[in-house]
Image (cartoon, rainbow, N blue to C red; front, side):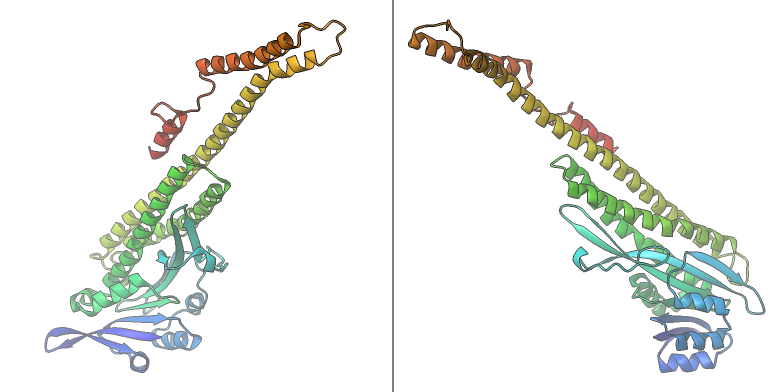
Length: 374
């Protein structure tokens, strides 16, 4: 689908005109000079890409990239009589779905569908890829999925002609800023899941928690792989200030996006470090639980050891058995089998060997929790 926003002048007043489908195709075949345009193509077809190739004379390699949405974030500059920039950016958004219906669709660069979950909640993510051609008086965007950030920027520009009047480069800044900021709600959701993971590890750790940790790590690694090179893209956009495609007034705005991406990158790295601590905490909790079980089994064995010894001793075939009286012999056995285990039990209790570790302020579990939250 093709749609266009055009900035026109009507009696000295700037007016935005929106064209779609056939009207947009006709406008592309008869370009007008002195008109600032934003052309948006969603779910592109080869015929639509051929149409913008005829209108703007884009390089075939850049158009080929628009047919296959598995590109890394990049910035390519095409010089000539009509110079332009070809920019590939990514962002992540939350899907209203569940893990059960997630497919195994992958791209060459990064999985398109990702997920992260804790015991109480689950988040499904998808990666959105946006291609843009930025010229002196036009902006062409190509995307194969619905992009909420792009739709928000489109409606904002449509109702405010002053934004398009500041140039196509400023409109692309608004779009890039919206795509970048759309990652922050995703990171907040992942942060809540990380908190839930941390709490569950001190409650009753299970093997499923370990699978959730590694799934979250895979998601964060995929986000870092995409958003890390995107910082360089925005840095290069800022350095293009004063060129034919990016004005000196607009270039500082791209540095602000660079700062936002740096914050996102640092949040991802902090999450990966926290996941590493969660793995250590899981191993520590499992080891502590194993030690508790072994301690209880050892105490039971120690209590039964005297009884086993006495039963084995008096079960032998002695010629001269002690306590010839059956009553005395029974009382002696009851005394030995009853008093010895009880005395040993009371002694273990006095030593504190029977008490389990309470989650107080000085326990290893609470100290580990404090370490994770730091």
